[in-house]
Image 1 (spheres, one colour):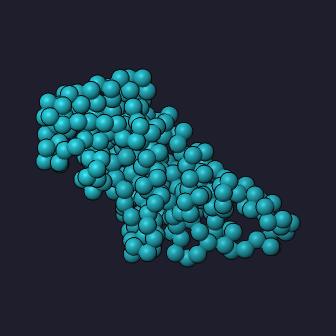
Image 2 (cartoon, rainbow, N blue to C red; image 1 turned 90 degrees about the vertical axis):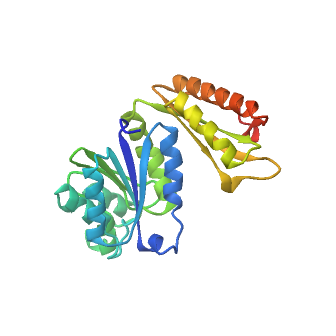
Image 3 (cartoon, rainbow, N blue to C red; image 1 turned 135 degrees about the horizontal axis):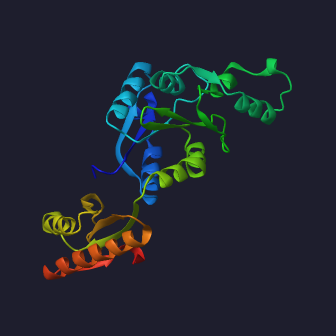
Length: 268
């Protein structure tokens, strides 16, 4: 979808790159982005290396990416580098967000600034000029920064915190940034990949704003092979209408091959 503004996700943490922790954040956000009509075109994992993070984010901006979302690297330890990297990219300094720090003190029942730890100060630090959103499920806040034509949204890595901030602040921003919406459904066919692939291509040819994907790895002999059908249009009603047309065409093509299509787990 070359004419649709793009979103890119960056999951930051050496533990991810080494395979010590699975990147469930990106998987969850990809689903949520699709629900509100966003076009996610790339997901990248990065180690905790300042120069590598800056380079990767700069390349995303150079590609014309409209929205860049990072997760991770907002903690109190020296290897948490996201704020410094985004600040460098945006050409600003990392600064302590005083409101966030005051919130930390209130939540910790601290009355004296001298009681504030270095870790608290680091987690309250954001790129200068950023719009800051408080974390309802943890400590490090979400920050929104402009870098040329891109908007960068910085989220913490712990899934509970990421989900809370994404749902409260990021989801609405993405939805407002896109004029198109998405409708989708999963069906099941009793066909092999080589049989169904030409049918998927035919549906996408006749309905250019649809995407169909068969999941060979999820095939079950008793139930067949799942196929996702996704439609994009200017509003939810139009997206649903296009989805219905695509599913109807796909079902007819399957039937013409002497096979059957059913909705997956009661979807209709």
